[in-house]
Length: 104
Image 1 (cartoon, rainbow, N blue to C red):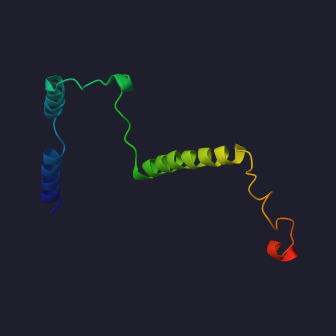
Image 2: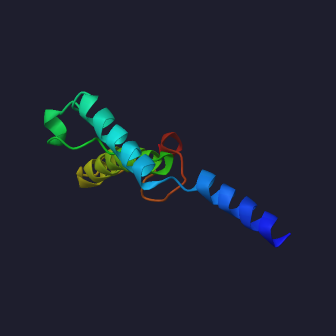
Image 3: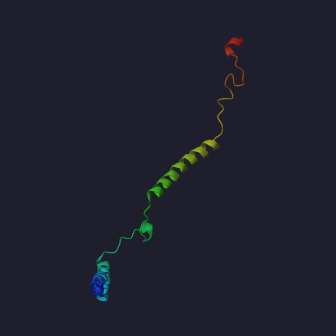
């Protein structure tokens, strides 16, 4: 039984673990494949780097910031505008509830 276990272990190891020659051939094939591939396109706006891939959360946050900047700008513009004079000269603005036509 011990001898059969040793034979099975040796056979499994020789199948599972590649030899040095097989590992070298595998590395050489990877290098050849890399040399055959065309060079990646370089975009002038990314300075030769790959464009970053953004996740869905990053896209949502970016859109929220973009939308809130417009809302904030309109809020600041409205708050910087002078107040309107429509309420100052209107009848009954002094707090009285009397009708203007009945005071004749």
